[in-house]
Each structure stands twice: as C-alpha cells, then as structure tokens.
Length: 173
Length: 228
Image 1 (cartoon, rainbow over the protein chains, first blue to last red):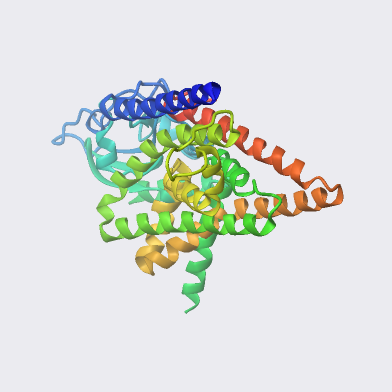
Image 2: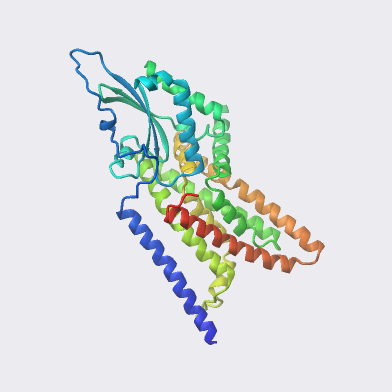
C-alpha cells in the first residue's frame, strides 16, 4: 500500500516535471531568438544588404543581379539539406561563369537567426524554401518561390533541371 | 471532369509522398507501434488504423479550411505549427510511453475507477484518433512544403474539405499497411504456437519502449536542437 502511494507520487512528480519542462521550453522558444547554428555563410544578411551594389545610374546601364536564396531554420532535416545541396549543385553546374562574375549569387540563410526574421514576411515563407530574387540597381524587381522543390525532391535530375530552367527564365526576363 | 480525377490522385499522392519521406519517419514508427499494439485483436487494430487515419484527415481539414479562407495566414499558421507542435510531441510520447509501460500506478479515487495506465491503454480507438490529430498537426518541413505549397492550391481550386481529407488518408497509408501486417502476422504466429497472450504482453511493452525512445529522440531534436 505504501509502495503504491510512493509509486503514485513518483509518477505525479515525473509527469509534473515533463509538463513543466514542455511549458518552459515553449515559453523560451517564444521569447528568445534561436541560437545561430548553421552554415557559416548564413550571416544576418538582409535583402537590402545583399543587394547593395554601388551604382551610378547616369553613367551605367541598369545593374542586374539574380540571388538564389535557400531559406532554412536551425532545425535541419535530411530533405532540407538535400534541397540545399541540389540547389547549390544546379546553380554551380549551370551558371559557373555568371557566379564568377557576380551576376548570379547563391545564398543560404537561416531565418531564425536574429535579423533574418523579416524574410518570412517578405517572401511569405511557410517552410524551407528556394526563392529567386531579381535585383535591379540593388532593388528587388520581382521574386519567385520555387515551390516545386518538395515534389521533385525524389528525382535529382528533374530537380536540378527545374532550378536551372527557372533561373534561365528569370535571367532572360 | 478528367482534371478532377487528376486532382484527386494528386492529393492522395501528395499525402503518400509526405508519409514516405524521412521527415515523419519517427512519428510513423510511433503510430504503427501504438495502432498495432493490440495484436491479439485484429479487428481492433484495423479500427485503430481507421481512427488514426480519420484523426489525421480531420486535422488537415481543419487547417485547410482555416488557411483557404485567408491565404495570408499560411506563413503564420505553418511556422507556428512546425515550431510549437514539434516541441510538444516529444514530451507527449514520453508520457504515453511511461503510462503504457505500467511501471508506476496512478489510481483515481471515488467513482473514476481503474488506474491511469489502464485508462490510457483502454483509450484504444480514441487514443489512435488523437494521435493522428497530434501527429498531423506537428508539421515537419516536408509536410509543410507539400501541404501548404502543393495541396492548398488544389484545395483552393476544388473543395478544401475533400482534398485535404484525401491528403490525410494518403499520409496514413504506411501506418495502416504496417499495422495490418503486424496484426495479422502476430495473430498467425501467436495462434500457431498458442502464445497469443505472451505475444500481446511483449508487443505492449515494445510499444511503450518505442514511444519512450521516439519521445526522447524528438525531445533531443526539437526541444534541444540536436542534429544527428
């Protein structure tokens, strides 16, 4: 009887601790910014900063730049790292010269890193996403969410083809 | 007319695509384990699978109805569910695992009757339904990508309730298949060796340990941010 009571108290304490832990965790996640922990290149860049190229409109033609963003969070899953890897491969394999000249740029950004939260609102992000951003004289003229990356993830060839085709369309447009 | 069938097929396929991705693997194993734990009663396993499927479908219908009313809500709803539901499922599985293991006894006084362990165990069908709802709402990047990015456009074009139900059914397919296999094979082996009661006992313990292990794994991943 005593052991049953003891067991009862033990369980109640255990359940209490688990519940308190969950509430605490949830509260902490809601009030604190996540620790930066991702790619080293994913700094707290903003859209304006990334596109800040010196321009002199009176002398030069419009400076164009296409940024291929991969937005991720601190929590990385297998599919998410795969999307990043394949997108990077697609850009590097298909647009080597344009990457070297700076006309095309690939950027991986952790949206949970302080200063990057605005990207969620800017691009209406609902999960890890690949976004094409067309910059003209440092200002974003248009952007596109390549939302088919999730359905094409199982087929590397088609995935890379899709990314390259979308980039080409943007470069021509 | 033809496009309706294409959309129906696409909705189910998107669900299956979600379920077979590595992302929900841990919760799928937990669900198979929970749904199939009454291996001695094949019918009960089948109904548990059905309730789990209905739970998932219900959760997706609720989210689809909400976001199709205002597509502007998609980023907020998706990010909220991905962040907070995943923080909750680890501790929830640990609690269910502990209670199913029956190490501790919690008795309710008065007219409540039974202890918490047997009450959780007896939740059976409703428990499976609840598990379906919770697991569906704990969106991972893949399910968020496919649901909000591919299924919702179909739901906007067609019928949100119908399309999201089909998606929910699709996401439960592996769990249903494995639970059925588990139930029938355990039943056959148990009957052949006349050891169904022993199998049942071990399956129940296995379920509890699986739930505990997956709960701890999810806590480490989502609550502590460990990537492994």
